[in-house]
Image (tube, rainbow, N blue to C red; front, top):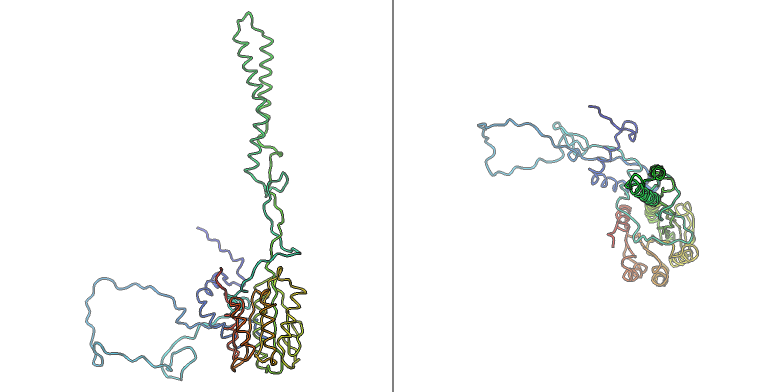
Length: 427
């Protein structure tokens, strides 16, 4: 018996199939390590891989052993310390042999280190964004159609052999054979009847020339029947395919960040880490998603990616300036009938006196009727301010498409991000 092992997908003598099987089996432990890694990483190294450790006890395999079998009679020695029903104290931690790098020094015991392995960048990001999606993503009709799909459009007489419709071709061939053979068969039948009638006549009245003529005619008609081909190029039919325009799920995400003076450097770092997670998520999971970066203090400005994350401009706080700019950009470049519109806003909740009311009106009357989803993240350890209270009324009006969360420290970023963009059940 011969065995063939296909290693074409295995690079450097590694089994990719076994590795994926291992990752699926210990997904819970790996996701826990990935969440811890995301929370402790800086902005600049979010995309690299990660070293993951799994306790040895969690990867132990069951082992089957042969018992002694049969019936045995044994006498076990007793003891002077314990009797039936005694409760034994659990061994205390901190002794030797823990093997996980915790506990104090000891002169006894043994153990094993945790099993550690490295995740690649792709595997790490797969676990980071597992189970996440853009909520309420719809397929929109486009004016300038870029996405087409080949669809069946009937039968054609021309095409490539790979698209040949065998059933239809055989049906056409059978119809052609019936049509071509019918008059020949009719003439052959008439000739044979005439020959039989002539041969049944009295030998005196029989016409030998007529009999020879009919036999020659019958032979000619039989050859014509045999010459009709079983299938001809005229019979071939092909499946016709045309490119049908398809609706697209193109989307745009507006990243709105407060860079006013009330936002401390710690608050800005948290906001940047949140938006970096969002940026990586969109770039990795969606091909047709555009990002629009908006920074604001007293005035809002659309910026590029570099300026959004690294500019040091600051000032007062008027949040409505950013919402108005988003509204203008949507009207100019992103019609709601053609785009899925999303907004993610990060702020400390501080705003100029009556501007929070203006924000509520802009959201409720202009933005939310066109948006698929709006997320507001408030980065503050304090009690909520007027902006949060105004946004609560918007959330009550649009409960499915408006989400609000509070972030107190860097450790809250990833859980909040997963909660905002978790995969929802299909309606």
